[in-house]
Image 1 (cartoon, each protein chain N blue to C red):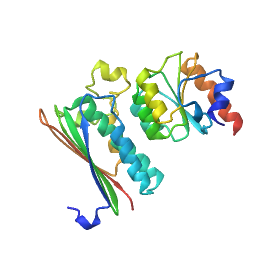
Image 2: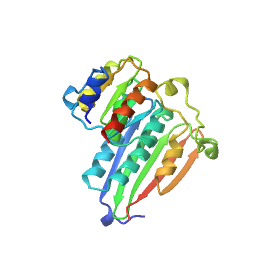
Image 3: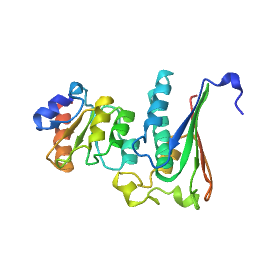
Length: 113
Length: 145
């Protein structure tokens, strides 16, 4: 499954690196503590968070995440967007809470397996 | 001491204390150096975690610091040396969940008290020494064989 499929099904709004929506999503991780995400997420994960500052791009790049989804309509900071476009990290925004969004994406991934 | 002819990579990177805008850039550089060497993914992954946590600690607490990467045939050595407040009680600082981070640091999702714990977990050898009002020195090794 690629990011574009998630964007379409869950009505996400893409805020950066639109040309990377073909990134493959192989799993997901939900969290706002960067050390936790660093330690426990995997390459190919879609990262679900409500952190909006530019350090999320550093973490996603280091961990080779497929992309980042911000929950509860949180908007990325402007320097976050600049960095995300520079490093080719897609950031999307969802109106859903982390709980709901995680559940929906988990189901989508489970169906594909 | 490692003899000079065995050193495959040696790089020093300066880290600016308090500059969260740049946090993670040194870890990204180090990761790309290790990937370029075609080291196993798991080794690169562990090195990146160790390096990132050391970098974030310097940015969060110290005035400035240096992270050094040395690669020799049988291991990766990452050293983090800072000028900062030091750690009065290392045993306490090593406990998962213990943190002295201020509110600003916590709001960004740092300061969860996982940094040193992660560093210890993901390195094969971990040494920490610290002097209050001087600084902290970390030495980590990740075995390649």
